[in-house]
Structures are given as structure tokens and as C-alpha cells.
Amino acid sequence: MKKALLLLCVFTVLVLHVGLAQSTQSMTVGKSTFTNPLSVQLGDPYILYTNGMYYLYGTGGADKGFAAYSSKDLVNWKPEGQIYFHNNKNGWSDPNASWGGAYWAPEVYEMKGKFYLFYSAQWKVNPTKEVENFRIGVAVADKPTGPFIDLSSKPVFDPGYPVIDANVFFDTNGKIYLYYSRCCYKHPVKSEVAALAKEKGWFEEIEESWVYGIELKPDFSGVIGEPVLVLRPPIQMSDTQAEWESRSVTEREVNRRWTEGSVTFKKDNLYYIMYSANHFGGAHYAIGYATSHSPLGPYKKADNNPVLQKNTGEGGLVTGTGHNSIAYSPDGKEMFCVYHGRTAKTGEERVVFIDRMQVKNGNIEVYGPTTIPQKLPSGVKTTSSGK
Image 1 (cartoon, rainbow, N blue to C red):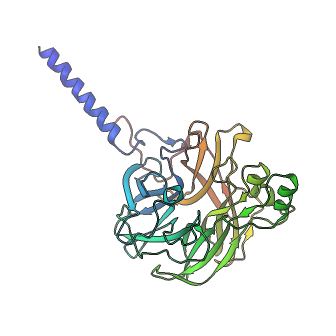
Image 2 (cartoon, rainbow, N blue to C red):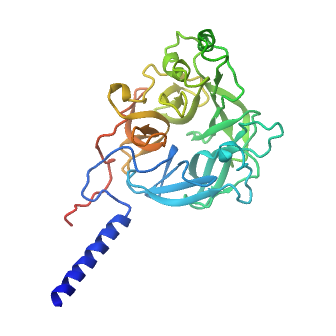
């Protein structure tokens, strides 16, 4: 009897131990590496770091709104649930429009003790019944996990065409800038690529999306001045960027060329803007960058573009790499490119990757996409499994 009770106690302890281990967030106990993709299914990932914690936001994982995840190490993520709901008291979007209201590409910024969520969605003010009626909104919360409430019952501004992929840059002189992508929708553009596509019988016309920048009011209630064109696809085939930025067309995926998913930062008095080109739903989605001495340009695209792209041509597993943000290791010594991609295993589902990147002498290098074990971000504390 005593032996049976002893065995029962041991079994109970083991069950509790396993359950506890499965419920804890960190998997870095006894491990010094991580492997992409991370176990988060999101598109357009964005990471905020505040008070010793990372928070991850992106497209998907929520019902007509946005969800969040938290982490201490950039690698293991805990779901925090839905943090933005379209039907908050100031909601301006249309959840019944195409793509379920198109709640896309959230980014959260901390300012003066508040947290501000910029995102794109379908605007319910749509008298001409446009299929793509996207605008950019901003919501505020007291915590990075919300709940976020829209600052206003309308978008930040109306440029007169659909816009997505908001990115906010805080310059060192105190000015704040909003970057966004004008959608391809009803925006056909003449170029040598478009002429080639028509000549070959691929497509009658090629629509394009362009990245613009504009100064934001300090309270995010609106914009200052007029939008400035920052990036667009190449016009001439001889342009060194034309080949990689036109693959969606030349591979006959779709009659569109995208410039979207931008992220801007400043280092050593030089402004960098990273961006994604090609069809976000296709294999050729890839990342490039450009540099400038002014936040609104002119920007010069880099000779080493694209800096991140599919690796299946070299025997790898990853396609559709794009729409990145930037994060730093816990000790601030390492810089990471945070992006979404697909593998043969994940299929059409977009999943999150993080890979190291370096910015030096005006050049960006991204060391990815990787799917083999990588060292944990520097500054991550690991605990021996024997303790």
C-alpha cells in the first residue's frame, strides 16, 4: 500500500512538473539557440520594447482588430489576446468591407507614458463604393496590451487614395514623420516594364504602389503639409533595381508592382528606409533599402538590394520574405530584422522570422533567411537545466 501511494505521489509530481513546464513562457532553460520560424503566425510583424519586455503585433490572430504577444527574449512569445477592437467608441472602420475590414500592419509606439497604435483598415466613409478604401488610423492605450481606443472617429488624414502600412519615425530634432504606402488600386503607371508586359501579352497595364512621407502633428491629430513621394518602382529596365522589384510582373504573378512595408531609422546622421517589393502573397516578396540625408528624401536605393529574399533557389526552404521591422537584443548590442515569410511546412500561412542585421558605413546587411539554429539574442539570460 505504501509503495502504491509512493508511486502515486511521484506520478502526481511528474504530471505537475510537466504541466508547469508547458505553461511557462521561456524555453531558453538549458538552451543557447533558437530556430526560425518562430511559433507565431502573423504577417507584417512589429516589435515594441518597453520596461524590459518585448511586445509583438501584426496582421492576423484577431477578430476584426489586433492581438499582441509578449516576450523577454525575442524568441519565445506568450499570447496576450486581442488588444484592439474595431467597435470601440471611436471606431471609424468598416468590418463588413472586403478582406474582413482589412485590419492590417499595426505598429505601436510609446510616447509620454502612453502607447499609440497606428494601423490601416477599410474606411466606412465610401460614397463611391471602392473595393480598396484603406486609410490609416491611430488608437491610444495606457498599456502596450491595450485596450486601444481610437483617438478620433476618422482616419489620421485623407489623401484621396487608399493607403496602408503606416510607419512612424521620431527624428532627433523633435519632428515626427508618418510613412505610408499608396495602394496599387486604380493607379496604373507607364514604365518600360508595363510596356514589356503589354507587348508580351501578360497584362494590359501595371498598377503600382508608392511610399510617401509626411510630417505628423505632435499629438497625432493630423498631418502637416503635403505628402512627399519617397520611393517608387523603377521606370526603366536598365535601372539596377528593376529586375528584383518587377518579379511579380515578369513571373506573371499579378499586374502590380508594390513598394510598401517601409521602416525608417537614423544612424550616424544618415536616414535609412527599408521597404518591401513584389506581391505580398507570392514567393518573390523581398526587402530592399535606400538612404538619404533628409527624412523626406531624396532617397537613393542601395546597390546591394535586395538584402532579404527567398532562398529556395539555393536549396533553402523560405519564400515570401518581407514587411519587416527592427528590434534590438536585450542588451542593445545586436540588431534584428523582424519579418514574415513562408516555408514548405507553413504553406500560405505567414510566420515570423528574426535574423541578425548590420548597419555600417551606409550599408545594410541582413543575415537571413535562416532555418537552422542561431545563437540567442545577446543579453538573454539562460538557466541551466540542471538547476
